[in-house]
Length: 258
Image 1 (cartoon, helix red, strand yellow):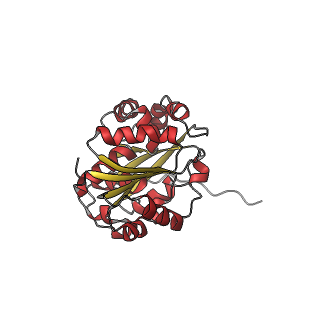
Image 2: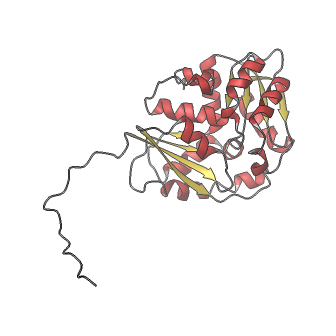
Image 3: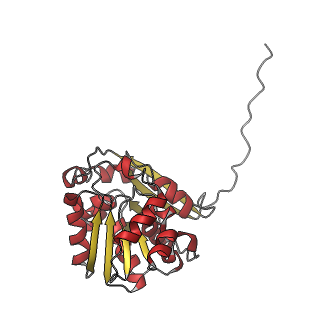
């Protein structure tokens, strides 16, 4: 065996960029999530914006009680994303849990690990998206049970929206929600949108709604806001990215309204 070569240390350190990527988005998702990572990869990640993911424990069925159990894990999940490094925004990617736990409580839990970071939740982003369209009367479509849908209705009503219709699909397992074909979501959107509604909100980060939103808007003739689309839009705008992405719906062409 030949002797190994001498290993030399370079005489000076190379100059470093401030960051590998200009902007950094943290994404906290459920252990069972199939959809948020691919959606943020296609809608947010770029040569300028990095998406950094942490998963936290979650067990089905999707009930208010189980959703609320995730709250204690939020701080630890946020702390795992680039420890001691600044993020430009962080999204907790669960619509129904955000409604049950509360936006303020989620923000406090995340900022305990990442002080001062802007926090985005899907229902908060959904409200901002609907406000960007200037609509007040909406239809809502969820994959949840009636029990899990009730807090969602209360959340949007409390923020000044008139709910023309609310349709749920009765699913209890978020892994099954992720298996609903995007083409089926287009048909469901058509059926779930009330004739008097100005827009449709499609709830749940498990749904592959971002792949269907353009079709849903064509089918309904109205703006459609979905959980992952709205969260991605909100995070992009917080990073100063104003580029239009109409392939992901009309919302992706609008400025952020907070």
